[in-house]
Amino acid sequence: MFESVFDGISIAQPLGRPRTRPTRAAGDKGYSCRRIRDWLRRHGIGVVIPHKDNEQARRDGRTKFDKAAYRRRSIIENVIGWLKECRRVATRF
Image (tube, rainbow, N blue to C red; front, side, top):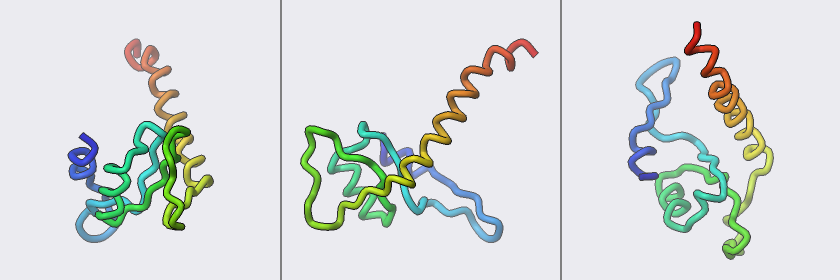
C-alpha cells in the first residue's frame, strides 16, 4: 500500500502544475524496511525513518538520520491528535 499512497500525492505549487514527489518522507519505525527505503531512494525522495532496534543499519555512509527533521514530524502528529479530540465539539456544533 505504501507505493500506491505515494503515487497519489499531489503537492500544490504557487505557479505551475502540482509536484508529485515530496522532497523527504518521515515515518516511524513501522516504515523501516529495506523495500520502502529502496523505493524512496529510487524515486529521489529523502528518507527520515529511524532504524528498528533489531534491524542492522547500513554502515556504508549513505544512512544518516536527521533528528531535527524527525522532531518536526511530531508537530503534525500533535495537530492530528488535537483534531481527533475536538471531534466531539465539531459534531455538536
